[in-house]
Length: 309
Image (tube, rainbow, N blue to C red; front, top):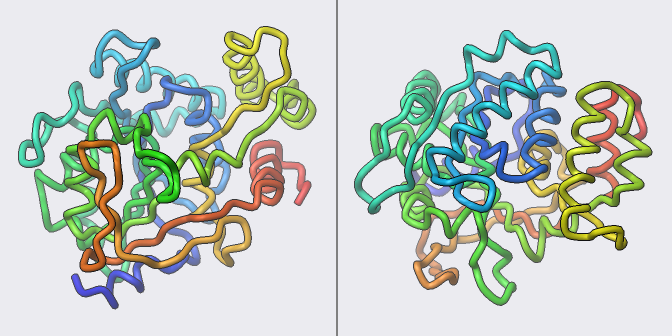
């Protein structure tokens, strides 16, 4: 794909677009917000599938266990939203991370991403929002490389280029997968975590004021975030970054008022937890600034149905 074709695909999408969400939903408290935010924008986002991504941390005993927990959390959220119709469009993902940059991890999720992408084209791409380790997306590309020209990947991962290192959870779990996606030439939007997305933080007071007790979904989102924060804050003041909402917001922000981005040669994630900046790589969109209050108002409006924008 030539850069002028890639740039056209990286324009902010208008109208209703086809989307897949790839999420490690149980890993944190922010994926839940992102999934709900996406499902509450049906006039803009036609969600074709939700895929469970692997993760490994204190909440899971293995990547496979993390993926299974994420799959169950997706089901819980869909029932909160009374969207049981999406249960049959929810797919289990990789049970391990990539062993190398050439071998896919086969899974229902990877095969569904590939199959859906093959139904699309450069003129009408599939948008894949990836908010976890990008194993499923990389595996789909390795299984069917031609899909790189039929989709746009919006990935929340890595840290800002100016940050001290690039050791970010979504990235360091599966650097090989990230390198597969970045090397494939797929049109790519990068939302870096520390130094950019980290500005989208909410306090417990804000969460309860705007979402608490509104309905079962909103109340769960607010109280789940507060409960998690209190495990480490222990009564002290805190704010919690709701990271993954920003990746969905990029698709919803047609006029670019909530998230600022720029076109640049895509950096390459290296195994030493740093970015390699190379001027001859394919172009990407790099989000460098978030207008926190505008995004918060939009998220609250969509989740609650009360326009506070």
